[in-house]
Image (cartoon, rainbow, N blue to C red; front, side):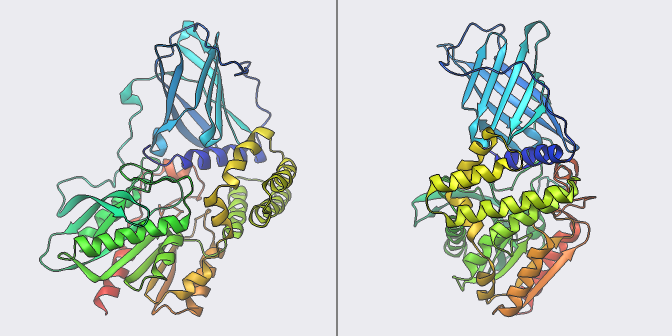
Length: 486
C-alpha cells in the first residue's frame, strides 16, 4: 500500500466525531442496511465493475473517496479503496456484498463501513460512510482515472536537480529484511554532513506523503541544496521496504533508523562525513530520534519537529482537548470525554487481563455516546503492541540522556502536539546532558509546518503550501551552524 492509511482513520474519524459532538443531528436512515450472513452473492442489478468516486464532507474538509470494484469469474465482488486527497492508495477492502440494490463495503482495518443503495437507471450509489460511531453522507458516481489522480503541490521539486539522487536498498540485519529509500547527495568533492529523516505515526512512504503533500521530499530537496545529504526511507511494510508493521513499536522503528545510519557509514563514507550524521524526526519520528541517539554516540545532532515530550497517554488527552476546542465542543463535554479517556488509557497500560480491560473500556466509551460498532473497531487499536507502547512511553528520560546538540521546533497552531509537550522537551533537555539545545515555536504554523489559519485538521489538505520556508530555513541554518561551529 502506498501512502498513509492511518490518515483515513485519523482525519475522517476525528472530523466526524468532533462535528457530531458539536452540532451534528442524528444521521438519516439510508434504507440500505443489510446482513452479511451467508455471503450469498445475488445477480446484481447493475455491473459495479469500475472506478467509483464520492466526496466526504466533515468539519469543512472535502475528501474524495474512491472504490475500484471488480468481479471475479466466480461472481464474487472485490475492491480496493483510495483517498487521493490524503495521498493514500490501495487500502484493502475485506468484503463487498451486493444484494439486489443494497451494497455494503467492509474495511475493518480502518474501522469503517460503507452502506449504500444502488440506482441502476442513474448509474449512482447513495449511501453512508460509517466510522467510529459517526455517519457521513457519501454518494458515489463512476469516475475517469484523470479525475482521481494525485495532484502536484507547488513546492514539489521538479528535475533536473543540482544534486545526485540514488535509489537505495539496505538491510535491517537484526530482523532480516530490507528497507528501501532515496539518498540525495550534494555534488561536491568534499565530504558532507548527512541526515536520516524519520516519519510520524502510521504507514508512511519515504516522502511522508499525505493529502497530496510530500513534506519529506520538500525537506530533502531543501537540505540537499544547502549541502546536506539526506536519506529518507519507506517505513517497514510500506512501498519497497520489507518487514512487518503488525507488531512494530517505536523501538522497532528505532532499529530501522539505526540500520539506515549504519548504511550511510558503510556504503557512502566516501561522500558522507561519518562524524556528522544526524537525525530529523517528525511527530512520532521525534520520539524515535532521541531513542536512537541516546544509545549511539555516532549520532552527531538531532532535530525534533513537533515531537512528543510527554507520556503518550497525557499527550493524547491534550491533543483530544485541543481538537475538541477547535471544533466548538463545549467545556462540559470536553471534561467528561477527557476524564473517560484518561481512565481508558490507564486501563490499557495497567490491566493485564484483556477481558477485564475490555469490559472497563466498553463501559467508559459508552458513557460518552460511542456505539458498540465503534468500540469494537477501537479495541484492536487499543490493544496493539504499538499503541500500548506509545501510551506508556515517557520521552523525558531519553531526552535527558542526549549528549549531542538538539533543535526542537513546534508550530504555534499545532493541535496534535500541544505547547505542554514543548515545555516538557525544554525541561528535559535543560536538565540533561545535551551539549547544546534550541527550543523554538514558529508562529502561525500547524503540525505539518504549514502556514495555517486555525491548525484544524482539514486545513492540511486545503493548504497548498507543503512546508513553510521559514521552518526549512531554521532547520538547515541550525544544522550548518552546528557542523561549522565544531
